[in-house]
Structure formats: C-alpha cells, structure tokens
Length: 213
Image (cartoon, rainbow, N blue to C red; front, side):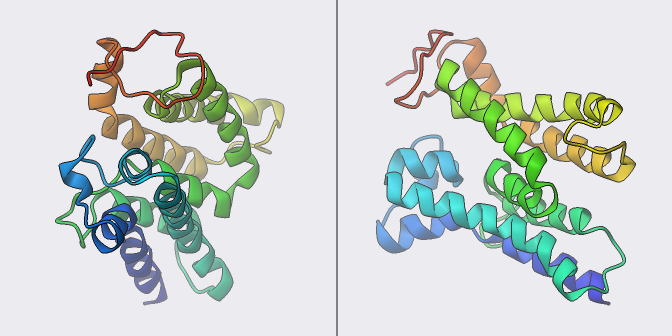
C-alpha cells in the first residue's frame, strides 16, 4: 500500500505544470500559445524571463528529487526510489493537471538523479554546459546528455569511474529516462538538422543555426 502511495505522490508531484501555472497566475500568459508551446523550463525562460524560468527550473527539479527521497525518508516501499522517481518524470511529461501534456522531462529527470545519483548528475551537468557553450542550444545539450548517459552506464562501471559497478535496474532506468528525453525532443532534432533551432544568447553557435523569427 505504501508503494502505491509513493507512486501516486510522485506522479502528482511531477504533474505540477510549474511554468504553465506561473504564466497564468503572474503574467496572464498561456505558455502553450507562445514560443514553442511547451510548458517546461526552456520556453518559460524564453517567454516569461529569467526569474520565472529559474523558479520553474528549481521547482521542476525539486519534484523529481522529492519523489526519490520520500520513500528513502519514510521507508516501506517495495520498489527502488529510482523507479518511484520515474513516475514523477511521467507526471511531468503527461500531466494530469494539463490535459496529459507537459514538459520534455529534462529538469525533473535531473531532480531524480540529484536525489539518487548526484555525482552522475554533476558529470552530466558538465556535458550539458560544455555542449550549450559550443552550440547555444538547450535542446541539443539535453539530447547530448541523454546520449552520453546511455554510453556512460555501459562504460563507466567497468572502470569504477563515478559508477561503482554495473547495476541492471539503474542502467535500465537511465536508458528509459534518456529515451523519453530524446523522443520528446524529436521536433527540436528536426529543426537542428534544418539549422533552424532556437538559440540562447550565450555560446558559440558553431553549427550556425539560424532560427526563424
């Protein structure tokens, strides 16, 4: 019974559409009608500004972290906290509070890793920011982290680097989370191929994207 309760809490936490609610309550703006139409962190930054974007990022990460930590703190769950955290990612992606639409799972996935494998998250954060500096695209940085995460869970345990050893459950969940992130970015990947992806005002943009105004 406790396991089901933790799963439900995780899903409901993940389902909180932070950017959408902030936009409607404080800016009278529906994020779905602006920018990419996404309700996640990136579009919140782009449409509502740095403060709203930062709050959205932190809350969306916190959703994942809490989902992982609650079963650790209170115990009694029959499933790994990482599996329970995955339900927060599903909630973020398919929010019951937003007609089962949501963000692209990056911030909440980061929050799950923060609660379960912070060293691995720190490593991926370095990959994210290096890629962001080189290419000026949050979408590409997110996809790059997903791909690198999959490669890393296959290689690092052999050398006991960051990951102490092979963990089938952890590897399976990382693969699943990374796959969700990549699939959710399929439109961004197409724009990157067309050199028309949205940029952030930072970095080198070495792929010479030219987004449509």
